[in-house]
Length: 232
Image 1 (spheres, rainbow, N blue to C red):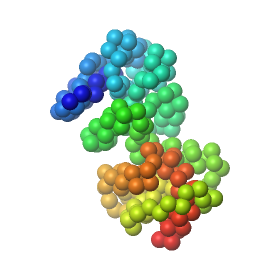
Image 2: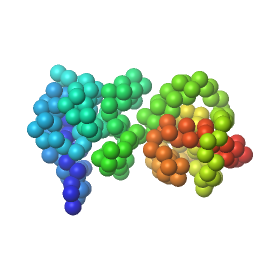
Image 3: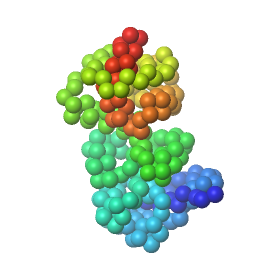
Image 4: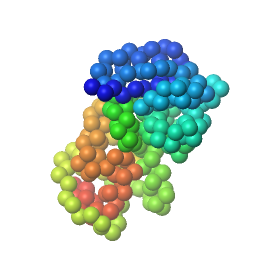
C-alpha cells in the first residue's frame, strides 16, 4: 500500500508527538519529518517533497500562513492542511487565500483530522464545520444576502435534480443556510457536534459538493431544494 507522506509543522514538541502517535496507528499514513517553524518547513519540503504538509499557524521565524505562500512559490502543486487552534475569520480567510487546501481546528476529532488528510492528499479541499461557517458567511456577504431566522434564499434554478435528503438533513441544511456553526446547530437540535458534522458530511456527499460555499451556492441555484426546505 502506497502511504501518504506527511511533513508535520508545529512549534510545540508535545503537539507534534501527539499527532505522530495518532498518525503512526494508520497503515496508509507516514510522518516523514517534522519542522518547528515555517522557514524550516520550506527547507524540509525541498528535501522531501511530501504528499501533504500539516501546518500550524502561529510559529517563530515564519508563521504558517507566510510559509504556505512561500511553499506555493516552491511548488504550485503543494498540498497544505492547516491545523490550528484559531477559528478567527482573519486567520481562516488569509490561510485559504494564500493557498491552503484545508483548514481543521485542533479540537476536531481524530476521524475528522484523518479524513482531512486523505481529502487534501487527493487534491480536494477540506474545511471543518466552524471553518465552513466562516466561508459560508463570506459567500453570503459577497452575494449581498442577509439571512434571517428560518429564511432560505431563492434564486433562478439552474439544476432541478431532486436530492433524497432526510428530514433531519433538511433541518440541518436550513440552519447551515442561516449561517449557523455546527456547535450552534447542535445546541438547537439537542445533538452532539460530531453528530451534526456527520449529517453535514452526508448532505455534502448527497449534493455532490466539496465545500460549504459550494453547498450554499447549489441550494441557491436549485428551486427544488429551496422549496423542499421551505416546506418543512
